[in-house]
Image 1 (tube, rainbow, N blue to C red):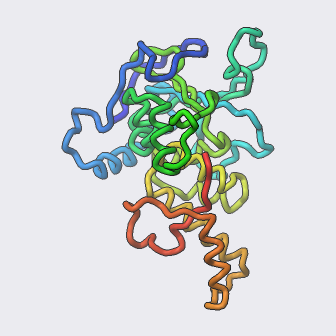
Image 2 (tube, helix red, strand yellow):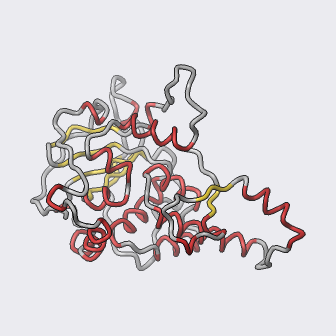
Image 3 (tube, rainbow, N blue to C red):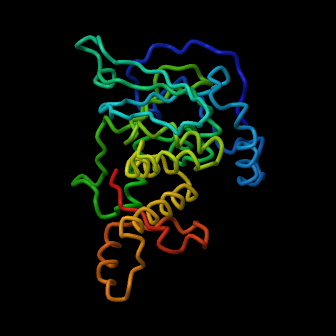
Amino acid sequence: MPRSKSGSVSPPLKSSEPISMASLFTPRAFPPPSLSGVPVNYILDQLHNLASQYWDKPDTADCTLVIPVPHLRRNAGSTASDMPAFSMSSEPGLGRRVTEPALNSVPRISLKLHVDYLSAHSTFLRGLFSGASSLDLISSAALSEAPSRPSPSGQFSVPENRLPRLMPCSPDHPILFLPIPDPSSIHLLVHWMYFGSTSYIEDCLNNGSVEWEGLARNVEYLGLSAEIKVFLGRWYASWLHAQRGGRYTSDGESDDDEADTETVYYSDDEESDDAADTSRQLPRTLI
């Protein structure tokens, strides 16, 4: 479970080696060795039960996510009106020296969070916090999604600015530079990781303050669990049904439906059986 600790001042953000090369960071496995043999679902339930004690508590945080925001949207960062407060510090990224790297040249947000909540839901962050190479993780994900698309050299080519990087940090408080596809919706996904509720995500999708596509791309990038994919699939199916005027598809429209399925993908096999209908369909997103 998250560990309480006194607040500390984080070191200045600078460029660093890829996360697998960082010498100061102490990798943390999930579940931790002390919970070996405990069912993961039980651990998740306990994390959700304790969420109110850790939500928006930066003084107990044991990791920091630094997220670049290269293109600010007018309603970026909007939330449902009754969503619990969540602190995000903003850094303009201005005034850099000519010799400083490009990662300091754009605005960014800083989130002080808890490793256990992130690792419990994100296979990508779990791998990074356990010491895996970011490039290896991204390449593995790309191989599973598109095994026929390696570069001419036989390796998957990932732009450097899409790679997460470990910033200078203390051994027990990793600071991760994380260029996710849609920074404007990350706070909603973080809330879901802590509490297990999709109500605020649904509110923001319904009022248009966040984009479905951005959420879906973040879900794929972070490797989030099937539960959130099922929710997004159901919401999209409901939205699509409303766009069609609430009418049910007849046999004569089967060709149109077949064309639609060319732009969707089905969630992982571990999804629940009750999601086996069109609610499992999500428009394909390319990372």
